[in-house]
Image (cartoon, rainbow, N blue to C red; front, side, top):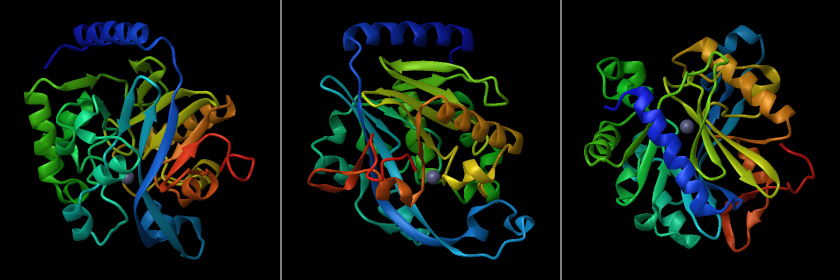
Length: 298
Ligand SMILES: [Zn+2]
């Protein structure tokens, strides 16, 4: 593996080269809802009983995201696959590769795929992107290819086949590792394309990334699983799967700060995303991040 400093320089140089080629265009951002399930607050929020509230049902939606303009199409995460979803009782609405085809994107032609973290519902279709350079956190990769990842509470949210696919990407030289500070307020934005930065926040997983995208409606923050539900921002309530609780709280604060600065923060699993942003014309499962149907951000 490359050294952090050498890699960071090369990655920054690559970012500059891409910036020139792209000419500064802004992106259309799509959230694609490909799966769903019914769950409960007790299952979703860490130590829910501590809050002294009655339990209740909650819908969890599963998304991945696309940032595209006239020149580039960048896919952020690739969802679970039929096998890993079915084993966990999730409802597949449309397999992610087919969902991309529906909106005119051939997965085999995608040249940049960001994997925000290696959980089964974000990294389950890596093989559908044989031409893509894959961006992920080095810390995340090292964790999931390491010994502790096999312990039950980690192994339950990842798939050996997905990790093997990531290993193959790395072995083929198609991986661009991000070396971040993993939260604790030492966030650094790293460019992966003109107008798109990633930030390693950690917390939910060792190297959880969030993705910041320039759009004509201002900055859009794809929080992925640094934020499952919008109410976590207002209630300051961590999700049940955590590898670093202080980093999880710090990431929520970081997202609140971005939102206060005018960014649109897109939660990773909240049905409000599909309900409050308009559907892409003719494509029910894809919503366009920008002005909401309600006139205010969820
Ligand atoms: Zn997730």
